[in-house]
Image 1 (spheres, rainbow, N blue to C red):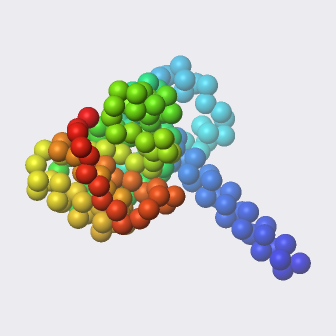
Image 2: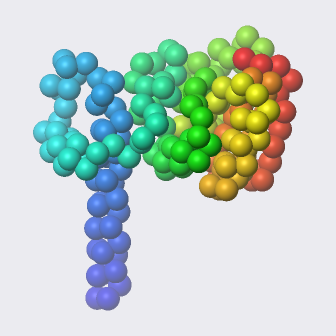
Length: 184
């Protein structure tokens, strides 16, 4: 009996976590939707959004559409919420604006990058919403970004002349840094 109670409690916690994650997704997605699409929202999502709207957005510095794949408007909603929260903290600590040059990527867009000779990989963290590339304009910004990313547990960094790649993909090797041979 105690085992079943434990399982039921775990399921309730998961369900509550799912509701919170759905609220966060809605908060990011709705500002990028047209009025026509908002009217098609499920009733339960409308209720979730109403509750979340009163709490405010969890992101201070970004809009979800900044992370859209170029071939799929609204796809920034596929970004990993926890990664975005950490990225927002990194931006706060760095004290300079971030321009996202690549966020979520559809498989088709990732393949197109590979086909044009850019340094995209088959199993890209971008396709799972766990990575982004940020424009960098000088060495001080590059150093501040990498140092702050490490502070917040982002320990996969790619360095290009004009951008830095950050990702939180736990399926890939940790504590690694690499250089890109050319910029995008």
